[in-house]
Image 1 (tube, one colour):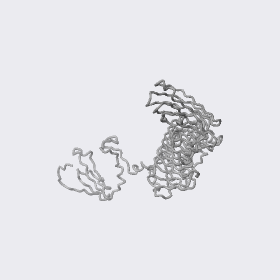
Image 2 (image 1 turned 90 degrees about the vertical axis):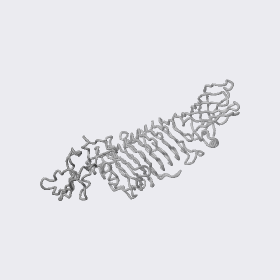
Image 3 (image 1 turned 120 degrees about the horizontal axis):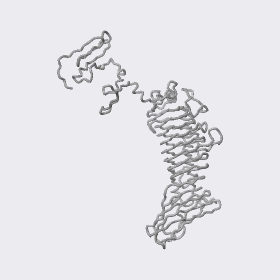
Length: 539
């Protein structure tokens, strides 16, 4: 600041609240209001460079800072944004309004200190989303932030429509539910009022639980029960969650599921919900529903150390309310299943459900390895369900890994009525075989057909061919057939040297066929070739 001259230092004094009040002070002149205990300074003239004529208040110990918080205006680092109608008239807001932009659970008494904070959570949800003055209006649809910490629930917290609960992240915001076989969160319809939550019997397509978002937290259920109980809930999103249950070993059963769906009716059901990056760990059933749930999507989720991954319809009673179809048109995609004792996906009732681009590790082995396969990995008891481009660790290990080729039955990746590709493209080595030898194996648990597309390429001789093996196996009658339709290019003298056949095996010696092996005979001396293949199952 350039100081032109100092001609005087003068402090004018008087009473602000008498007479004409505070006068216009000269440029740089100080004025002290003795009655209000306020200090002011004159702005100066516009000709001197002042943005406008007037007085500017200087803050002192007697001022209420919150009174002046309305002078907050958004500024970028370069201060180039015009927030109001002109540069000299920015949009100003009070500190109260600015702080209320973000609603913290701590404002309702939940401090994340490990104590029981059920009542504080419920009070927050009731007042934000069920308060009669604002319920179902846009201003009530705020975000409730749950800061990092440990929050104990001793009973279920009811979640109404339009609630948005955002934590600090997995294993940062941690909810521990201590009730026995209870649940952490359960959805309710908008007929609910604070402290009085409507029965699902009152739900309709207009008032049912909807547009709920829960993200960024870990929910732990050490005493059993459901982490998330979605009751007739639609159009909601759940992401960045870790749901941890109490299931640990092969045979024990604990009540509850990481995610449990129920529906009032076929019309008032759970549909169009999305689950993204939800990690399920330690559940008897990670996901469970026997009701009519529709068009729900699980994407990039993780299922680890569970008895069953997803159980659809195992206890459905068709014809009862909410159970006319069972789960239909649900999608599980781009997810991983690891250490699942029984089926990773078990659909007893329900149709048009899709498993696609998922990866299955150590599934169906009763928590053991592939040396002791017991259960299928995907089981379709009902019709019209699909697996597309799923990958199974079992296909590689039981298919062609030398460690698993003898005395280990091939329990199928996919059980039930389906037409599906098994895994991805696989590659095995072919050398000179003077007699038929096992090349790779497939399941023969029931009458099945296989289409095996293959490409044979030799790096030792001039021989290549592409073809398709059609295999039909009937284990009950110990029958198997194989046909090979192929195109060959190379040395004509070698065209007939490569032959395939299928052969049944009883690998566990229980007098029943359980495995079919694709056998190869190759009379080309010193051959060094690869066979790339992909399997389609029809059962």
